[in-house]
Each structure stands twice: as structure tokens, then as C-alpha cells.
Length: 178
Image 1 (cartoon, rainbow, N blue to C red):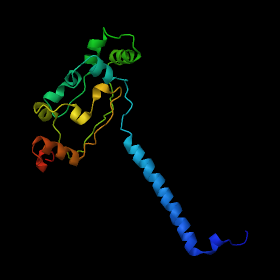
Image 2 (spheres, rainbow, N blue to C red; image 1 turned 30 degrees about the vertical axis):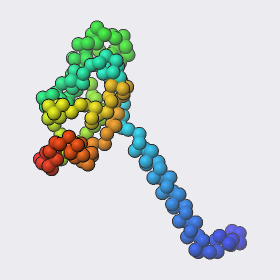
Image 3 (cartoon, rainbow, N blue to C red; image 1 turned 90 degrees about the vertical axis):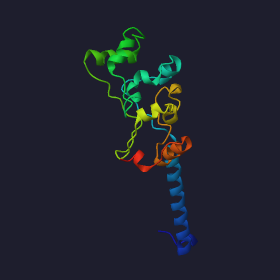
Image 4 (spheres, one colour; image 1 turned 120 degrees about the vertical axis):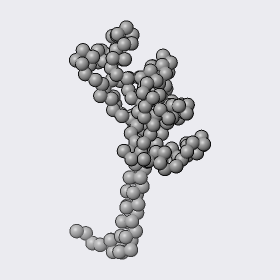
């Protein structure tokens, strides 16, 4: 080991250098976390279903596939037989439609990955929002422009409460927590 230098001789200088390195590491970690938070959650799905094609191009209403939203707490997802009902005749050679056909022939279901999921202590009712004529894109964004659905709104309590207040809807705790 060589002779001590001015940097290693001063404890105060070593402390400042260590503190600077620590601050730089924290800054790098914070930047990487903040950029990860800016990337919306958009899970890969078992069928590469394009909302841009079905909603945007074909102008299908959300209720065609999520018909339970009008009459239930949950929006639901179309059963495979509804998909096959159209794709028996439409785009039959498309690779994703062929995947649908294989699932149908094997009498299996599509294991979709949820994009939005609220905590168990929150009760959200799609029917109530549908009856209040709240457009789907209020919470889900412009799904018709998305190839793969991504989470564009963080459905935090503060966001929901502000939405209720903006619309003059009740914001009492028991509305969502009961």
C-alpha cells in the first residue's frame, strides 16, 4: 500500500466523499424508480387482442365484450364462444384467431391477465357507474387507441374521491368501503 494521500488523511474529506457517493447512488435509484413508474402496466396477454382494431377501427362498444358492466359489480370478459361467434367468419386465418380456435377446440378458456385490480377492501360497482353514464375511458383511458391495454390511471382513493366530488357524487367512506 502506498503512502497516505491528502484525501485519505482527512476524516472530514472521506466523510464528504462517502456522502457524495451515497447521494449519487440515491439519485440514480430515484431516477430509475421514477422512470419505471412512468411506464404503465400493460401485461402480455395469452391472446394478442387489439382494442385499437375492435374498438377503434370496428367501433365495437365496450359492452359487446364487457356486457356484465351494465348489470353487475364486475365488468366481466367475453366468453370464448362470443369471440368464436365473430371469428368463425372474420379474420379466420389470423394467427391470434387460430389460437382462439385451438382453445375452442380443446374446450379451454382464455386466461386473461387483469390490468386493473383494486384491493379487497374496496368495493367498486361497474353497474352504478354505467347507470350514472360515466364513460369507460374516465377510468380506463382511451382504450380504443391501444393495441395492448395498459393501466393509464392509478385508481387511488384520492383519485376516486376527487372524481366523485367533481361529479357531485357521494364521497362518504361507506360508498366504497363496506
